[in-house]
Length: 381
Image (cartoon, rainbow, N blue to C red; front, side, top):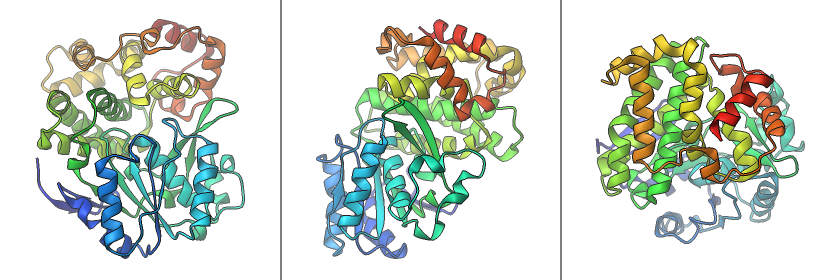
């Protein structure tokens, strides 16, 4: 699929190869005259980032960039980004990159005009109403990976560097006003990042599909998102220049983030604290714990995943789906256990407490308790 199309759901999306050339036009449409491009350190000097800055510069919008962003962004990165935004007199953000650049860019635009600390806007109840909505700067999102789907999300994940907890910061107005989804920006992704981000998209769709909450629209999006990953992630992994596979994975990533409005579950409840403490890649961590979580949830999801397996043309119902996940992760070079991922000598009790406090826990099909979550973590190791 290499079409060039415009979508209006869940926000304005300019989808298609080469559409990074429209970045300056998108700024104009959003009322941005002095954009700050926010990305991570690894992307800051790459040709795709310089291309984006060239597009802005040639339109008279400057080439201001902030890139002091960790793989798992924290409040220290955020404070530095907000300072750069204010000092530069910027009036909008171009969030550019994978999950880290997108999440932090959105939060810079959010926090630049707020007076309260960021932790006051955690995704708890109606805490988002504490924010001054009129002070949130416009955001344009440009994904360079195909996994998190943060480009179409109303939240960002931020690590507390003191407590090593990942927190979800939510406000409806941090949904980017324009997304430029250009699959050409993903063709040079390293294979390990292609695998990890692709499995993140799959995890979003899988957990949304299995969530017990009622949201039929998300249910359908999740199912089709899993199909796109199944049929295209191996191709994108084996041949990064396969633009059709890259485009389908970019769609799947946005679908996963749209679908998980229905809920997430134990995969994310485990991966969030593990990533915060051990700085593991989020999508890869999701992939490592995916089969143990499927076994954990089997009593509640066996029939539902049998339906999914039929749609995905996988024989054998739940068992066939489970084996497919194992075969896919092995094919993508995903470590088999958290220990192989680098999680050594963990404080299991602390991880259990963090997992149970994670908002994703409430969407798991099987109720998570101290006892069964501890057993699940040990099984992942």
